[in-house]
Length: 374
Ligand code: FE2
Image 1 (spheres, helix red, strand yellow):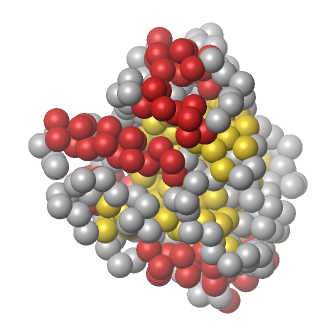
Image 2 (cartoon, protein in one colour):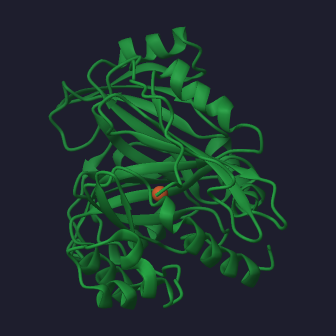
Image 3 (cartoon, protein in one colour):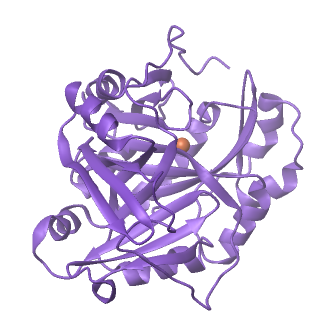
């Protein structure tokens, strides 16, 4: 498959070690209702709450968990402040992709020394379960990376949150961990943010896709995937490229009013069961023409799964040198056409489905056309 341009072999020189994604926080207009959506539709469990009842006056946060994935949905209690402004400008969206580290003070100091912009100096939060140290740095747009140290905390999440048990526990759908989080940035800014992840955080460029790889009749984009040393953090960065019509990245930038997180890919060990569950609970996915399945096995070779359920559900397949992967994309989960989710099952493959880009982008463009944005 000649669709990826592998850069010269690079290695990461992590500025500080990252154990993995700690949580992803969304700033939303109505966290109570959003929480119910992710519980009922995506099978997350409500495990924690922070708000006026726990002594936090200005916001309410719901902690949702499934597998190793933690989502925090936070809403402001009034129109004042940064969070309300963020929601007015961007709509609901991802504010924070938090890193789990062993030494937040050291990580923050090293990031700042290398040029990171501070959002929050290391702050100690304590309760009778111990302490969490949290710091924060900026990334693209109004998005941040919190840096979270929890090695001296025995509680379920962090001080301020109380443990929540609800009688409403929709069955999980098999989501295991965050595989990658993709950012959309402005035209000409991809390399700026690639440099940020490389110079400030010590990540390396795992894969690059140019506009010849990722183009359809109408639109194009460029993408570089940045990853840390242990590979647990993978951040593809997209920028629009010139096409005949408005690209999906431009549509995102228009509606999000700037750069931000485009999609979160979550991994499952059984994509057919996971997607069947999600569909039965109302999650909407992009549809792929049936002709895709006429030739997919010629392209990817033998796979363990039957093709019939993949075709029925619209699951895509791609292969690289190390194996194959199965993937599917939801429609945007907000009214603004901004963030969507990817469900991915890796069977050896370490890539991102470049062989599917054309079919996928044509599907996205059909949706864009329906919105009057193509
Ligand atoms: Fe993806």
